[in-house]
Image (tube, rainbow, N blue to C red; front, side, top):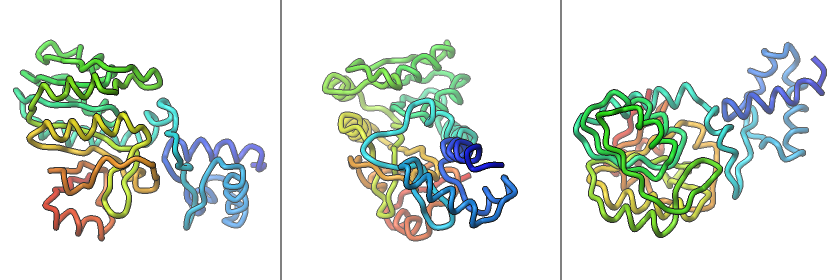
Length: 252
């Protein structure tokens, strides 16, 4: 396959899976590793991918990737995370579900739960759980982020402060080596912090690709959480920190 055809396909694989490897691409396209390294170097120079050891990842920066790309990224891993998270939410619980494609996956797993009260600033979550007649859904209000149906801002935070729920389920855009949860939108960060403060237990749902990204705004440390649900174990140093913080990690 000529380079002109490989490059768009490599970029699409990276958007779907979060990262690509030299060996995996060489096998997929039937070319040498050296050829793939040249392809990745070209995509890196064009600002479309970022080279890392053994492959490349989607570029991070101050702006998140689009909602449709995020929804497709690691979709199966998100479903597995969502199943594990939903399995620990008891019927009759009160919960917050925040903005994020993984929290939306959790909502889909809750469509058969009975007696839930769900407070959300995510219009997509509200629409998903509208299918469950045994779930009370409360939408916080706030400023609509048209790109993904999220609600943010002072009105959202004021509404959240009216509740004290059993569990808050949040996501993040990136997770760094020190265990800090990061995001792109300052207003969304404020909402996430309010959710954590108003819940008896705080859970993070995040797939492993977030460890390969960065974002400029800090939500807080994993040390303030009760549980992290992810698709594979965190790196050993971060797992050790979570053990010290008594933050439980549930991985598929």
